[in-house]
Amino acid sequence: MITVHHLNNSRSQRILWLLEELGLPYEIKRYQRDPKTNLAPPELKAVHPLGKSPVIEDGSLVLIESAAIIDYLIRRHGNGQLQPDPATATYDRYVQWLHFAEGSAMLPLMLNLYVGRLGEAGAPLHPRIESELANYLGYLNDVLGHDPYLVGDELSGADIQMSFIGEIAQAQGKLQAYPNLAAWVQKFQARPAYRRAVERGGEYAFAK
Image (cartoon, rainbow, N blue to C red; front, top):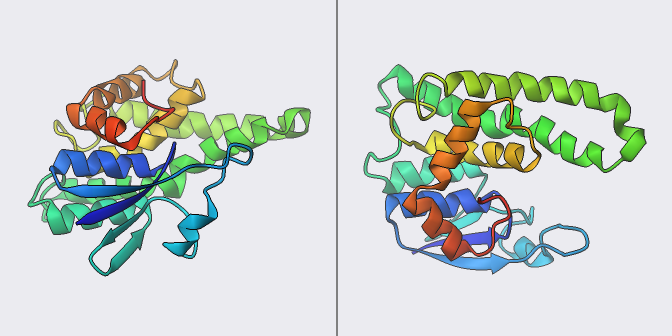
């Protein structure tokens, strides 16, 4: 049985969604953020030394990092679902998106969040942050203008990995200028497996 160590309002929500899309049995161990600091509780360090979520356990394996978990679950348990044929160039684009989410796109969104808390002290950084957001979100919007999902006509693990980017951008009020990106978020959030994952995972601030 796969166990997901699930922190509320976190990246682990997309792992629950993936498991629902794959129709795999799993159990959830829940953790709540500290209401004052918004940090994960120390109990997560008993699972993995970094004390972060998502973490999954599958037998003796303990695995962190959303992209690694998505890749593992699809390769080991997906039976060919939710990824392109590895022999194709489409698969290479799929892998690109698995890395792009945290390697590039998440940084300016996190900076926007944290620098926004600095008030006037953070003002000099805002033009650069906004420039980077426009660069990345514009790129995503253009890609989604050609296909309904990131690597074609069908949902893949790339969309699941990138979903948190779209949701955080939406929560920060950044999607008005990016209609294709906004439509993509609306489309995946309406999927039955996504809704089941939210129901199982508990309150999720980024679900509409």
